[in-house]
Length: 124
Image (cartoon, rainbow, N blue to C red; front, side, top):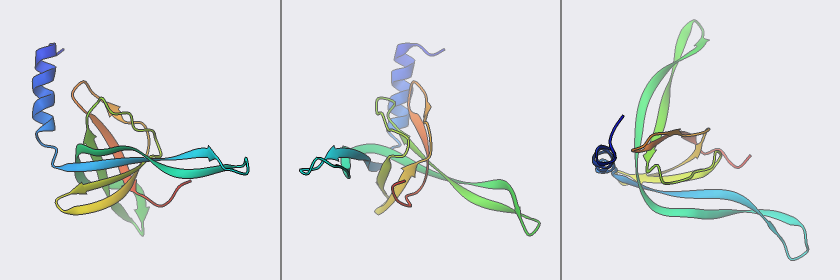
């Protein structure tokens, strides 16, 4: 187990690799003027330092007797941030902006959290 000073040092080292920024958007309900419920995108966090990581993974599904290879996209971000599953996440890194959605609960560590993403397809 790391001491508090070690956690701070490791966290600073990890955060020094953050070369992108992100915006977190939730789809929240609200009451319209006619007393019906509507939904709207709400930005809950802007300009948060982060880092995208891409890797390939072989799927267990086979397509015409060939294993499918897909891309795994992970977001590395501060453990102090709460991102709800299903949130829309816009990431700008290396002069490219892409829109993703969180696919589930994040992997939380003392020094960072890792969130698996996929391309945003729309609100469910």
